[in-house]
Image (cartoon, rainbow, N blue to C red; front, side, top):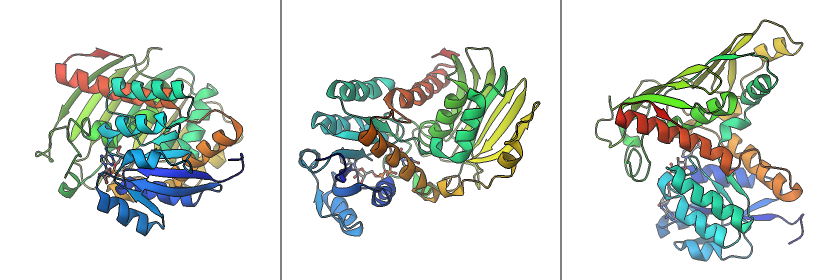
Length: 348
Ligand SMILES: NC(=O)c1ccc[n+]([C@@H]2O[C@H](COP(=O)([O-])OP(=O)(O)OC[C@H]3O[C@@H](n4cnc5c(N)ncnc54)[C@H](O)[C@@H]3O)[C@@H](O)[C@H]2O)c1
């Protein structure tokens, strides 16, 4: 393969989010979807038909052995990312892995180590980082515009109806939890991307409405950051109708509120020339949100992130989100659960 020949993609796990990957691959220059695998053969076949893909199999090993595939998207349930990821990495493929990277840091570490040893790229999905609003917030924090951080908080008050919690969703073994690990992990990742990882977490969790699931549908936490700032976190899938995800960063010289990818507050003691345009910028709505239902996100974020991986393969430029970055949200989620289960503050 020359550096300019199209990159062949495969998908393992042909459920809901796999469709977003297929759409994003089809819209990415220099990428083509070559084959798919799902442990349910009929699911792999119908997905392949729908997306015009010639190869479908129930055998992960058969898909990853194909020499015309260079990148595999792992879109299996969260606690079933590790095994197909290891198979793809062992076959020398670059891997894109859905969020969360895995459900525990121990399992995430096995993927990170295997990819590093094999010399392949590991691109965990955190598509919210690719929004124009999120990027502006990151740049402002990195430039020191907020001064000393005082409070850094995330609120993810979403709605999922009862029909969402069928199969593996909300199970401890395969989802790894509920509203925190599955829905709020994007917000936790953004929060830690902007403010850094807290050093201590004190959390509680409960089931308010989805009482039939094993895991929590509601949780809250307080965070203590290494620099001394504090923060709050509220998460649910039980609140109707579901509001935009909200990240609040308050500092001694400025404060920002990001609602989904829309900058709702952009207040700074010292004005910069770009501030007025940022305050009135349209929401990067192409990214979608997910507050009311899982399928209300769009494939735009996946398109941007898959494009980032393709650029890295072509140019050697670092990935925007790599395994070590994606591990941080898993570590934070694990600490929230550990604190809520033990009823004590937990250090990360
Ligand atoms: N980035 C986002 O915004 C976003 C949104 C939704 C879901 N997700 C993530 O995507 C992943 C999949 O979620 P989903 O909603 O598409 O799930 P899903 O249940 O709709 O699909 C999962 C598919 O994987 C298959 N599968 C399970 N184990 C397998 C295995 N070992 N080998 C091969 N196939 C296997 C199942 O048969 C199913 O078809 C999860 O990790 C989830 O957290 C991400």
